[in-house]
Image (cartoon, rainbow over all chains, first blue to last red; front, top):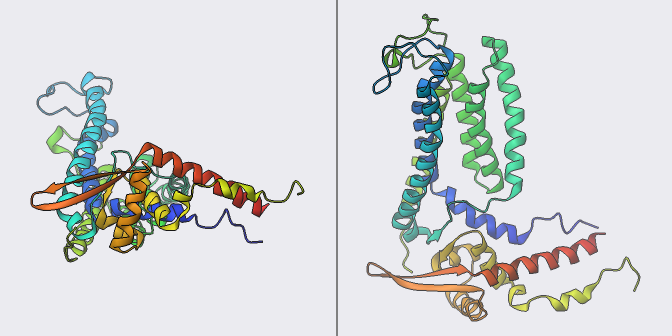
Length: 246
Length: 106
């Protein structure tokens, strides 16, 4: 007998169709692009200080002393990352929700979501499995071509791809599967075609930081660009739909 | 009845208000969000305006759905929200159906 319980649950079908509305119009892509760009810019000095612990912090931090990775500024900067992420996520949620009500609701209907979406566990499983497989592959490639483990770069390249792949698969958004492939490919290309800076002692200060040396920030910026394009196209298509009245 | 035979007596215990496909579609749609308006429910469930309105009234009367009406500028809106009771009824229905379908599988 065909298994009845393993068939696609019709309740889940409606639940997924509802949740799909959160991603379908492209506004989330734009918010995510902003999040990745902000993360790239914020983490850039931190990444440099981990790679080259001999440059100085910009104003308002001390500009004369050589950085010691245990200094308070570094700890504050790292902790600030969490505050930046939390603040941005909340702000993005409010702005995206408002934009959906203002521009998307007249076309597709008004659907409002809580800050934490009721996402099913299956999506986490797909994310973790694809992330682990992708990371192994990418780290292997980077090891062969550039030498060194490059954990951070592999994480920044593969994690967004895994997330988009999982969301695209569960919520029937083929766009995300293409975007996952494109973003992963472009971020890896950017990584492969950049070489180490010639000053291996590190840049002199914050402004002298090279934007392209085996840098996870570059990977994040590539991803932000890909999501910006993807979100803009999806939003354009949604806004072309005719308005309907209640 | 042998021990391996499925127990269909549970079918009579199902909440008929939830079991009706159109109302089940409305409840399942609302379970994925905080609230949704009439237009979104129309698009998602595929019901026509009359049917959707009639089923929504039944769900509201049962206390499974909360309705909020208002104006956004000059445009009227109607928002539907799943209540705690509606959420529990839907979960119970899902559990009962899973159990019965599980018995058929085994």
